[in-house]
Length: 177
Image 1 (cartoon, rainbow, N blue to C red):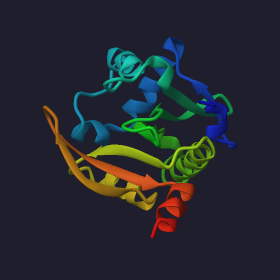
Image 2: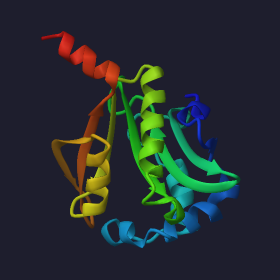
Image 3: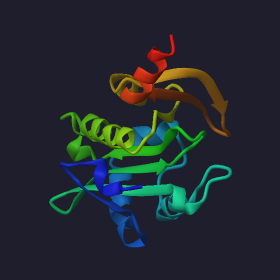
């Protein structure tokens, strides 16, 4: 995946061990997320997230990236290629630094990333949010993600699966009828 194509405004680069302290600062600035999705972020949990993969996926199909502006980490995204099927990109995690919130930055990053994913040939984007987290739900609905009707119980919470057809995918869908 060409991660640099995910944004024209931000420098996009793969998160490595060296960036874990910056990711941790970003995550700790968003305590509401962890109220719904415990436990709170730690260097160990971020390290685990860097390597976490869904079933039947390889490290080559995962990008855990940072979006940087003037050297400052503005957002992080965990992106899995071709999951759960060949036409879908899965956003496993997305969080914006508190200093960049409420100015449309998160939505702008998502719009650019989805456009890039469409250009790369993906027809859909999928993600989950923790049921009950109204802030997350509102953000993803604002960015035109729709619930699929699937909810998955986890140990401490339930996740709601959402999906968005990308433009090419939407046109393809309508051409069939």
